[in-house]
Image 1 (cartoon, rainbow, N blue to C red):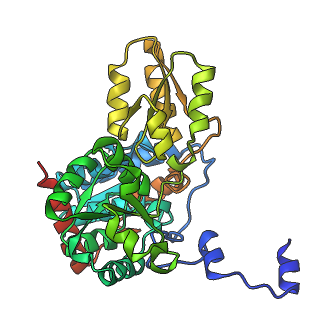
Image 2: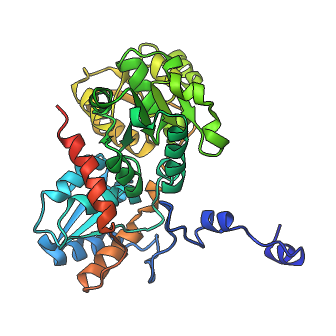
Image 3: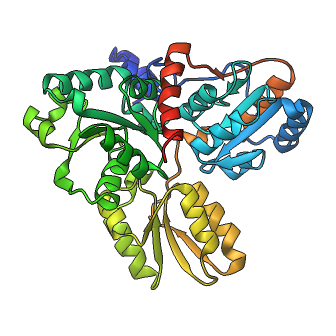
Amino acid sequence: MTTAQTQELDVQPTPLALLLLGREADPRSERGVECPGDLPSPSDPDLVERARAAKEKLGSKVFVLGHHYQRDEVIQFADVTGDSFKLARDAAARPEAEYIVFCGVHFMAESADILTGDDQKVVLPDLAAGCSMADMATAEQVAECWDVLTEAGIAEQVVPVSYMNSSADIKAFTGRHGGTICTSSNAKRALDWAFEQGEKVLFLPDQHLGRNTAVRDMGMSLEDCVVYNPHKPNGGLTAEQLRAAKMILWRGHCSVHGRFSLESVEDVRARIPGVNVLVHPECKHEVVAAADQVGSTEYIIKALEAAPAGSKWAIGTELNLVRRLANRFAPEGKEIVFLDKTVCFCSTMNRIDLPHLVWTLESLAEGTLVNRIEVDKETEAFAKLALERMLALP
């Protein structure tokens, strides 16, 4: 349907439709909209040289962080690469850097702002680089969930554990209610700690990481877990179900890792005899159960580094990283393929492209601060409390 036809029918786009089109903003959401100013053309042949020149002009004033899922054209300008928490800590370890340019997504930049000094400015090259998982748990929804737990008479027994892939508001909620943050690497340690503090855990916002850790790593049963759906009254659960559960899992997921299926695993085993299937714990439980190894992005990288020459691997995580690892280890005779036949990048992570990075670096080099990510002091204080609890885990 054309715009003219739409106008003739007097159809008005909804706020959600405008948000998805990038034409409106929701201040309570991870999604942003647009950055002011003009971007250079993606086909500009001088982009690489312009990025290099602007970065050299800024010198030690800028520190560029690149998440593993970033495209190669961006990652080449990163001073350090890693997962979200490693990068936030790396930023905090560079107090001399006035500008922290985070090539990642919104919640990552928030975490960097929380952990860096007040005089440091965290910049996200494209404000529309959000995270669909983090979007699945808003502060209002989580507050309503806590009311449901209170009405069921179990709130005092519940310890919230929030995945690093969450907004600053959710991290602050976790801090206020005596909980901790976790990464995909230390989720079991975080849950062990939480069950020492209380009888139940509210795990936010990724149901799969929570379920996989509880069942695969801690010996719980699937029946010990219930899923709280924020779009249903009382989360779609009865008070009896909440009282019986050990793990109350938020109904959230990663759009990339959620695509992998048991059929993907069976298909790749049929196509590549002797293949090792290695997946991220954000994958569905049946995928994790069928895999040979499970681990974070850092675990995946180290496993492939230690793998013998000639070994074959199917990796269930974001395609940019898998492709980069395949190219890196090809000279060693290691065959590395993407687990699914369907190509799937993280669409929001890929919003950070070379034109946005060039625009950001050139603006900063000219003395113009753009796209600053700044967490308010109250939110920062409670979110930092939750992060510090994680840092104190044994």
